[in-house]
Length: 217
Image (tube, rainbow, N blue to C red):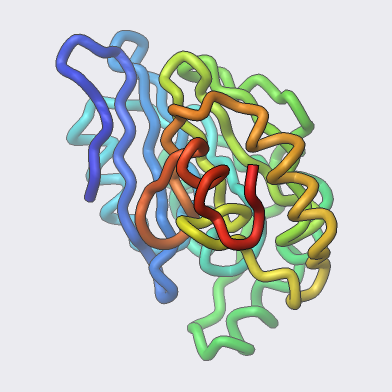
């Protein structure tokens, strides 16, 4: 588990792998208000809930970068335990609706998920730590990144990885779209911003613009 915060900061982020495919789940919170976002709860609901309790944070939303099974499996459990609403971009509703088929394809025990409560839009105010949603389609039609400008932190899901980009050979994927999303939306952000990827280690926007073999800045 990694933590990105300073003692005097009200911003806290904990990122840790969850679920059968090691998706990076993040809990982002405001120490002063006690409000928190749960991002991509792909499994290990008990661990996520224990962390919220440990940090004295109340989840106000469960938000998803996209609707592949490894990023959504524990959404229902987290909602049931916290009462927090589920958010998803409407473009990925078709993937949400076939989560049981996704599970069968990957040999994962099936889950039933409640419908999303709200749809995320581009520039959607996340209501915590100044975060906003940025529509970054390509990996899926409804892929969303979450940017916390004051804290120079981007949750990129499976759109951008350290030295790589998300797959576009799955249903709804589009290579031209993901390249455009990265070049036009993500690379326009602060070079110093930390990028929390959907799997694997963090990177930074500046580093990817210089070194990413798929999309140079």
